[in-house]
Image (cartoon, rainbow, N blue to C red):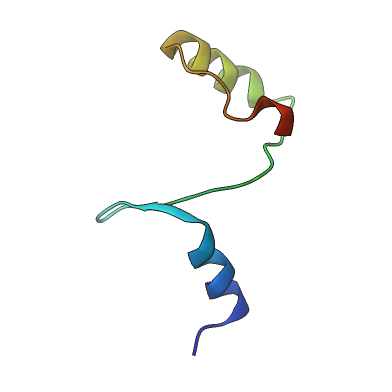
Length: 56
């Protein structure tokens, strides 16, 4: 029998990576003053847009 945590986790798995972590879908993106600038700079350098910026 699956726990509530397992059910919620399974419902949010986007991709299973063999011998790696599972990729989860998270509906809110939180900005942190210490780590976010580097993350956004990395996206900018790679030409990647923020997914659903209205939820950031």
